[in-house]
Length: 224
Image (cartoon, rainbow, N blue to C red; front, side, top):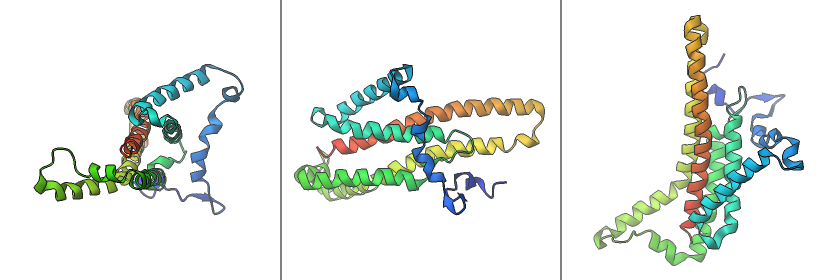
């Protein structure tokens, strides 16, 4: 029995004092069949089409002078979407529902963008603090607002991903816990609702992965 609603997201469960939950973050690659690597197949074609589409999207955001940078963001999308879908499997730890992982992804990226921008595009970074058309008396206030909004970016990225993944899992857990107390007719409705929620969570898993990668690329483009 769960001690509380959030115990299903507890990363501290262990076997022989060895925490194994975080190892799930690297297990997604094992779900790919051998033929994915050995020979062309429908799976490799579908994955290639998805990655090519993402490459085109990020190329527009980053500009033609940073084409190689799209590899970072397509890899980020792939890593997050793998972990999101792993979390939909029963009794598998959802690593992306924890700030420990999401902040680990967002903070180094944001820090790298900021360091690069302030060292190599100092004038541009200062100019970015004051939007065009800002009245003179409002300039100090706009600089303060833009500075604060820039500083909280890694936190908002991390919270957005973790909160969206945790919210859906909590709803499914709450609804599922009512099953033993329902009649057979209501159990059928419960199963149907869980299937619909699972479909919704699958869509959220893809959307949140894309949003995280797309916003990261937007932050990178602002330093150029």
